[in-house]
Amino acid sequence: MNNFMDNYVDVATRLKLAFERWPELRIQETHREVIEMPDKTCFIRCIVTIWRDANDPLPVIASACEVYPGRTPYTKMSENEVGNTSAIGRGLAMMGIGANKSIASRDEVQAAQSRQPTQLAEVVPFPENGLAKTYPSSKQLGMMRGLANGKGIQGDALKAYCCEVLGRTILSTNDLTKQDISKVIDALQITGELEN
View 1 (cartoon, rainbow, N blue to C red):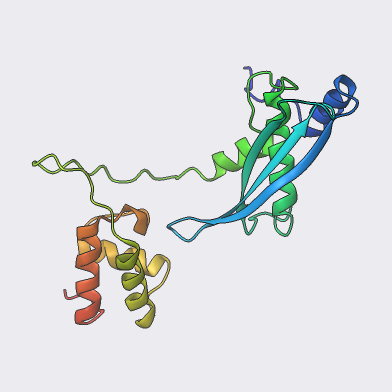
View 2 (cartoon, rainbow, N blue to C red):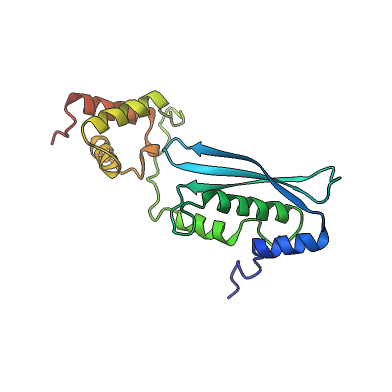
């Protein structure tokens, strides 16, 4: 059986090949930022610019994101370095160096596979009136979390609380609609405890 990673070329090898092809190659980290997602997870986005030589009229600009803080002993406290290495590997692949079939690094592919949910979210059909899901506002999310925190309901306990109030399973609070959050806020404001 042929593994899709069999033809993978690691970043160190890509870099060696690039320097052989362009001896005056230059790489610079041109931007780095921390991005906070709506679910409060954070990423470091690293952007690099790669010049083939000092007169390169069209340098390659590549980026990669790394979970922050890192979740393994190899990435924790090295998130920026890992992100830059991934960005460099992507840039070199865009230049045709080591891009056999994939631009993603082996670590990126394995990390993405490890983040895949083991359980799929419940399929919620569109309402009969055909309207799409209405997403909650950041104020609604903040109010829900604030009320829940005040009652000592956090993390998985908040998710379980939402499931109980709504009478359905959710994988995360990101699955909640504007109407769902309103119901949870109402329940938290009343007592904070479920009525059975």
